[in-house]
Length: 199
Image 1 (cartoon, rainbow, N blue to C red):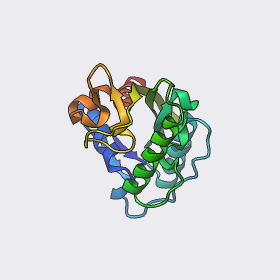
Image 2 (image 1 turned 180 degrees about the vertical axis):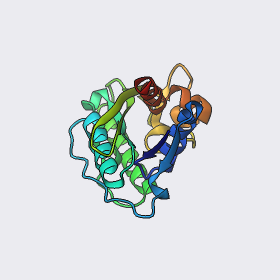
Image 3 (image 1 turned 90 degrees about the vertical axis):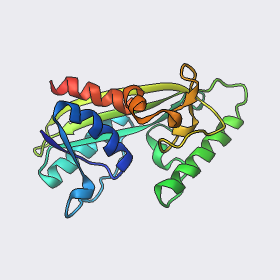
């Protein structure tokens, strides 16, 4: 089975492709298309809604079975923020590294204003596969629990990875080796759940 993964994030493509390859599913990315369709506006209020919106839009535009995901960070003491706004929470434009730095800085400032609050947080990933006629083939959700540390650590990851500390592992998400991260992460959990849904 070949599926187009509707994302411009190469880190996501690598992580998901490694898991799906074990079941004989090949992932193609938007970067492999001659013409990339315009990105739909992600205006849903839930991760599930945004994943569904993107999967359907790209499937219809390309004529391919498409996988889309929506993911982000939920911090309990921030009432679930940044949530669906995770990627552009700080409102800063620029490349991914610039946006990530601004988002992480905003996160640490927000938590500094609540010094006595618990730092429980989680990464959430929802996935959706849609066919070109707009029908939903499968959906899934995965989470990755931890707590926010003000001191970033690790270089294996992106986004908020250096700030999600995993007490049972004694390290951040960004310090995990790729093979371990694929087993534990929200995206890994959602991808494996997606395989179950497809089966």
